[in-house]
Image 1 (cartoon, rainbow, N blue to C red):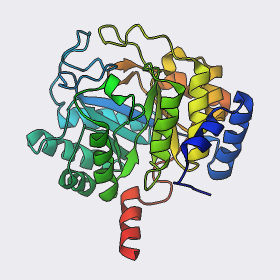
Image 2: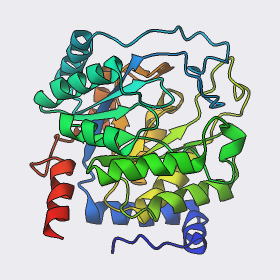
Image 3: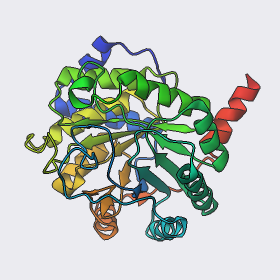
Image 4: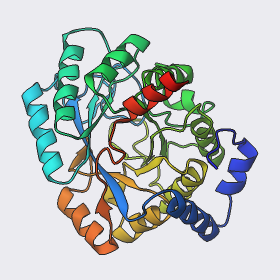
Length: 333
């Protein structure tokens, strides 16, 4: 049964199961609701890099931190579409575009992003964006352009959020997710492990995600990538078993959601990643970079897929976009 009424106590009981029992239960749920041989391959491109006014303690694109990230204005539309074509040829079925903005502004740059969305959509790829906070009308414009999914991570628990970010609130994040959901766009929202949070914070973040009116279409589980010049550069490396525990718990709570093994894969062996897939991960980012942080290349992932007997998932497997499905459901109601 798909549930949206999980309690903190129930989630904690699942999260604290002996690791192998937890993975077994998650793998059982995964096999019941998904094709465990398929993994969604996504590519993420930074279309506007650096100079962000936010103070997210993990992010090398924040203007206030001294990192090696150089500021670049919005890329030309043609260059972005060419990158998308190469990603598709390499096996990606979802193309994600990220811009280092605090929020979307109704200006020429936003109009250009809408053109990018239309162009990628015409290639038959699922198109996703992460552009910061947005309004209800902006979400509608994105939907009308053909946006399939919108990423807006919660990062951590409501209680710990202020320790990581002070330039916006948790409510700001939830409001944006509400606008995205109302527009009929698939919600992509997850968090980061290794920010200095407690296990309790991780449980509370999963509680928030699993009790949304609709489960997110995808939940990225990121391991902190420690970047020199950011406040979290000296945090300890994330333990792989913490990642496995998070992925397995997310899979049990949200059986049909795409659980994405996201940032931090460059520090994981193939056997460690295999454990994550066993625990319920069925999506990855492929390509040399995730915005500005390192990531395994297409060839490495193809070799891993071959070894593990995995294959890339097709785009739009149900034959129509999430937007059209949700909007049809609204009409029927």
